[in-house]
Amino acid sequence: MSSVHNSRELLLPSLLLHSGLLSRSRYITPLAPKLARRSHLEQFHSREYIDILDPATNGAVRQRLLDEARERAEMETNSRVDFGRRRRRQKSMTYEDLKEGFNLVDDCAVPDDEEKLRRFFDYNLAVVGASLTAAAVISGGGGGGGGGGGGGGGGIDDDDDDGGSGNNNNNNDNDNTTTTNTGTHIAIAWSGGRHHAHRSSAGGFCYVNDTVLALLHLRRKHRKILYLDIDIHHSDGVQEAFYDSQGVMTVSFHRHEEKGGFFPAGEGSSSYLGRGKGVGYNLNVVAPLGCPDDAFLTLFTSAFTGLWESYSPSCVVLAVGADGLKGDPVVGQDGWRLTSRGLGDCVKLVSRYCGSRGNNEVDGNNNNNNNTTTTPLLILGGGGYNDVNAARTFATCTVASVEGVRANFEELMPPGIPESDPYFDRYSSNNFMMHTDEERTREMGEEGEPGYKEREEGLKKARGEVRDAISRIKGKALLGKRRYEADTFE
Image (cartoon, rainbow, N blue to C red; front, side, top):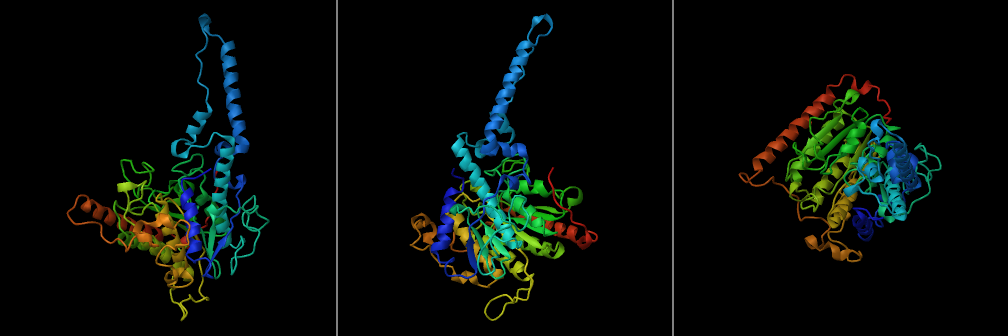
């Protein structure tokens, strides 16, 4: 069963390998992720929804619908009303009706063929397993790896407890998990970031929400987690999961149109601030159409550094989508104008803070002082539908993630795509260079051109909303003494 990111998931590990970033560096260690189990999925998703995805129960669901339809037909045949007329027949729910109710149609269709459904479900278990393995590594739950990667065996057993025997290893090359060593407080699962899946529905190519499941795993050890999402589409599934929670500060940077149109339609308004005990802990940052690297980084820096100080998270999760790159084929003219360099700068900033709790002094060997306290950082993927540029971007961001451990690590990244890479010919855009563009994008456009004023006003509004959000967090009474309750889904 291929996925929407199938090509990207082949390109990225090949690029990391042939560029020498894995073999020449002691800072990055690839890990074989473990395969998740259905019990992991049900920690967020409803059983009825998973019954459709799981080939072990899909057949029973179909048979139940057929039996119910047959029984209803028999009852209606035997029932009579006044004047001998037969009762009007009620329409029975079909399997197609059920799939539509769970949004398992169109871009989220599920295979009807049994073997294809099995491969499809295994793929989704692999995606979740990779993100949970990465979360377990930075939680001290094992997961393998050298040079501080932790011991093997453990991290994601049936009940998602830390430690234990765990699951069988899954050596799917498409779902590599990477850690940056020296204490292993950073782990990456580029196959993850399926942030559109809801508790009982799919959305935007996402069937299971590995992001929510990884956050739930991390919440076992962390009272406050800062979740940052820089995919161009709103992280609606994650917002749904933690909208009532103060234990996960959810921050989504995305495009949004008040009258709908931009996916997910109607979602992601900056007016959504949370609910109940979670009021103030949800921040939607709407970056304007055509947003370049410099403006985006300024906006991101303001939000991250302000919340780092005011919310004081004990763990950070960063979802990096590559669909904000200029010219993304799915987003098209409705998107931003980011480059791999710009997104890499965001990762570098977060890594630097997590590597030294904001104290960015390094020793003479360009290494952060080992006496500083590190903050666990989980990096996940996201959208990005130009497979070649997504691979370039995630490779760049992998290098950027090392910034908190070794400053200027990016100097080891080769300038061009290595000819030894079997996919070399696919990188002809930008003259086979490692980056998507020669330099960062810096301008919102020419003053006076159509849409320029609206873009500038949108950026100004977003900056103001970020400041307001930080002020709300600072103003929370006794924030540090508040009881941060466990997040559960009933």
